[in-house]
Image (cartoon, rainbow, N blue to C red; front, side):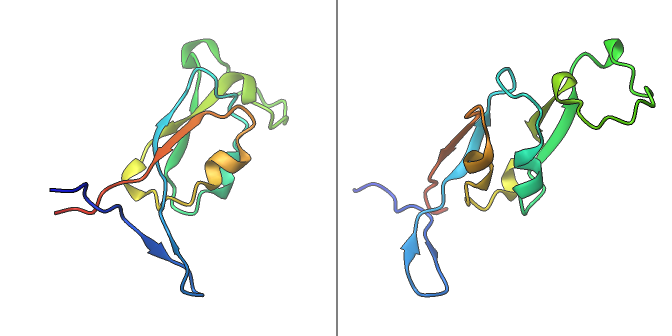
Length: 104
């Protein structure tokens, strides 16, 4: 018995492609820049504060650069469509993707 075929997509023009679904996000190397969050069309990611007990979340300093205090997490990985947009914009290469076999 051969290997199971992978999930395959088709472009509007009829070209086949194999989606690469997000399987991991390295939270240790993530800088919390939010680029992946902004490009994800399916709300797969959520931003989390590092050491919430140590961070003043009500600082009223009006700077939106909290990247030192946050990181992204996979909150809804099952909604990933395999577009890899998150990986293309990530400056730290935090994402791991893989193709998935068709469900039996």
